Length: 586
Image (cartoon, rainbow, N blue to C red; front, side, top):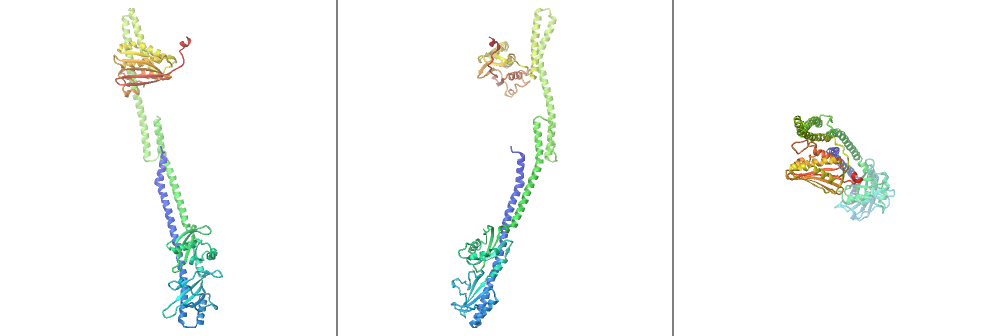
C-alpha cells in the first residue's frame, strides 16, 4: 500500500509544483523568443540605417558627378577649359581621384589627370536603366577601396556623353567603423559578388584584402550576403566566425546596388540580458520550488504526524491496550477526530467491563445450572438413602445397598468436580505405548449396558492391526467414554453407534460415529469450547476436556455432522515404535 506521505508529496507536486514548473518553462520559452526577436529587430534597424547612409553617400557622389557632366555639356567651352573644371572638382571633392568626360563613342573629351586617363566608359550591358554604372570595388596600391562611377548623359537636343569618375571609399570605411552594437558587435559592407569592402572590427581589416583576393575562401558573411540578395526576406541567420564564436547576423541590401550591409554580434553578448533574466528566473523558480517543498514537507509532517498518532493508537486498541489515548493539537477536524477516538476508547473500556460482568454472570449461571443438574440427582439419591438407613439400619442387605449407592453417587459427584478442576488446569498424563484396538474394545464392552438401556446397538470395529500410540490409558478411556456416551444420548432407539480404528501410514485413526440427530452447522464450530453443549442440561465440559487430553498426547480431534443423519468424531494419533513393558519382558 502506498504510504500517505507519498500521496501527499504527489498532491503537492501536482497542485503546486507542476503549475509552477509549467509557468516557468513557458516564461523561459517566451522570454527567449521575445528576446531573440527584439535583438534581431534592433540589429536589423541598425543594418538598415547603415545601408541608408551608404546609399545616401553613393547617391550624393552620383549627383556630384551628374552635376559636373551637365555643366560641361551646357557651358559651351573649350576642352582645355573643361579639363580645368574637372581638376577643380577633384580638388573640391577629395573622394574623387579622377573625373573624365567621354563622348558616347568613348572618345576622351576632358580629364582631371595631367596625363592619359585611367578610366574608360563601361560596357553598355552593365549599365543600369537609370544610366548609372557602379563598378565592383577594388583595392588600390595602398590597399584602400575604390570604385568607378559612370553616368550616361542623354538628352533630345544634344549628343550623348559619359562622365566617369573614380572615387575613394574611405568614407565608407569610416561610416562602417563607427557602427558598434554592444561591445563586440560590428557592421560590414559587402559589394558586388560579395566582396568585402569594409569591416567595422579593426582586427578584421586584413579580411578585406583576403576576401577580395582571387581564390580566397568565402567567409560565412559572404555566403549569408549572397543568400540575402537572392531572398531579402531571410534577413537574419546564425553562423560561427573564424574564432568559433556563434554569431547573430542580420543584413540589409542597398536599393539599386548589389551591395549588402551586415551587422553581426556574438550570441553570448546579444542575448546576455536574456541569459541573465533566464538565470534569475530559474533561480526564482528554483527557490520557489524549494520553498514549496520545504513548507509542504513541514506542514505535511505536522498534518500527517497526527494521522500517524491516530493510526498507532488504533493499532494499540486493536491489540487490546484499551488504555491508549491520543493528544491531537489544533482545532481542526483531525483534533475533533482525536477527541472522538478518545471518547470511543473510554466507551470501549466501559463496554468491556460490562461484557466481562455479563460473561461472568452468564458463566456462573451456567455453571450453577449445570452443577444443579449434575449434582442434584446423586445428592438426592444419597439423601433418600440416608433417610432410609435410619429406618432400616438393622437390615444387613439394605446396608450393603446403601453402601453401593453412596459409593456410586460419590463417584459421579467426584467426576463432576474433577471436570471443573481439569478445565482450568489439565491433569498431568503419563505416556506409555498403548494398543489402540484393545483400549477401544474395552471401553465399548464396558458401555454395552448403557446402549442396551437406550435400545440401540453399540459395535466395535478394530482395524489398526494392533497399532500402538503413546498415551495415557485412563485418559484415553475417558475420551472414548465421553464420545460414546454423547453418541448414545444423541441416537434414537434402534440406532447404531460404532467405534472403529484404522492405521494409515504412520498415523492411527479412531472414529466414533452414530446415526443420531446430528449437530446444526451453526453450533458445530464451537462444540469443543468450554461450557458449550448441545444438550438441555449439563456443564458442556466433556468435549472441551476431551480435546485438551487429545492435544496433550500429540493428537488431533475433528468432527463432521449432518442434521438427521448422524455425527462422526475422528481422533488421530501418531504411531510409536515402542513396545509395552509387559511385551518386552515376555
